[in-house]
Length: 237
Image (cartoon, rainbow, N blue to C red):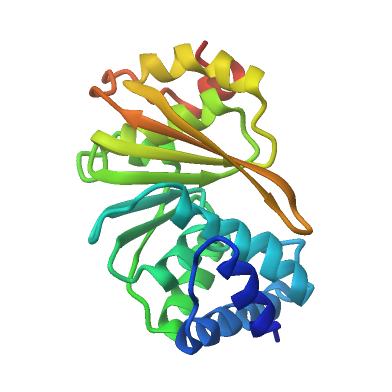
């Protein structure tokens, strides 16, 4: 399915070493993605080399963006077809991963992938703003990730409530402009966070990627996250 040598060489550019077992898992994942995508839409990216660059390498840069402690509890918010969570889990099977999405079909696909790859993770069928109000998930995680097109204040309101103080939110954006980052600082502060670091990458065949790392420095006020309609119509400023 995929060119394993290409994946290995591209990952090595970021200091990520993939052994034959990991490469086989990525290959199986790609096959399942393409097969299932014929039944219902998971992704518009189905060409083998595009999967390598735009799904796998794009997700794996997360592992070099921030140190994730052994056994860390990680939540991938709006995981879709499992990105970036499953690629991270393939190379870091020690983490305790929760894959959250509001679309049940996507989670059925993810559960099948986990079985086929011999990996363990929790799947959570919920809207982020509802799960973040549950005592089981609120301020329980060390790391939260989101690979989405939403503006940073919106992503932050969905993700920061999941983090315990000291945890980190990693927003993965194709274009993280300085203006957007500056404009989000007030919202992030309201939610108990502070932008800690910004890392930029150029990924071949993908273009620029910006990883915005926000540290949780205090508890999120109980009124956040708001209802989804409020978050989208009136983002925090």
